[in-house]
Image 1: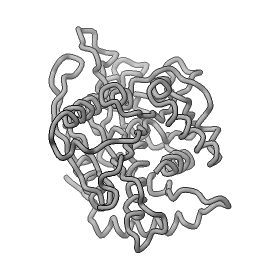
Image 2: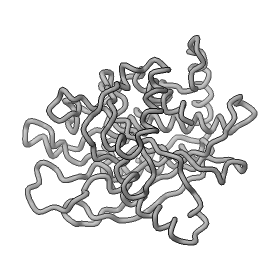
Image 3: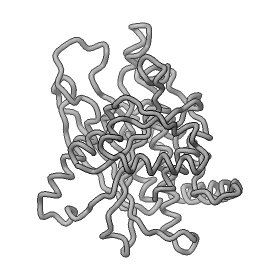
Image 4: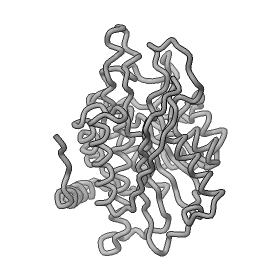
Length: 337
């Protein structure tokens, strides 16, 4: 059964959440962002069930994301394509892109914000072998980044409305919900596999971006200042060190983002430590598209995997989502726009 939020409900929800969150202004002027709203968007994704690529929950969630972006004033593009998975079998990909711009800003360089909306088909970090064939629920690994960016999208929509916003809209933003990020080769697979099996959606998008740039298409004129990818950004004990690929490809922007976090009082989350390189969507945006892109991702150098104990397990549920973390990440992202 399909259950989608109506436009009137979205407008009402936006007004209620906007009113609630404006009451939380601190002494310093903080970027507009509402963790309550982001939390609701995460819950809504979880209500669909695991968003395993090309399953019913995945497709329903994709339609809902498109409707949400349109309701917030974005011009929405659905990028369809195929990429071979770890076995070499083609996987259907549906990247969802929301373009936020005004006539005055349409030709300016944009900021790219991304998160993946799919969930991993296997809980291959479960200690019991039989449990490794369940789908990952994906509250933090997937839904948290999308939830934060949906609230960013809502704020951008309000900012573009000059009748309600005092903050001028000066920089266009593209929000991309990448598909098939989490279908990399599972631990339970022992056969031959190809390279680059993770982040298929961002690989497709980056390749397409380069092809457009080399063509005469009107969309080829779209250029980006830099990008930010969010992944696993909702845990109560989150830590976001400086990821190595981000440092290698986008050091200036990484420093800019971490300094903003310090100024906003979130230095305990955005820690001044270097982490190991992580293959995430930002890697292919950097390597293929040549757009400097920074990964904000939960990583704990004290753990064997570097990721939380419930990473790629059945425990990746709403108990691992904390509003203060969402607020911190959301404010830091908004400070860059």
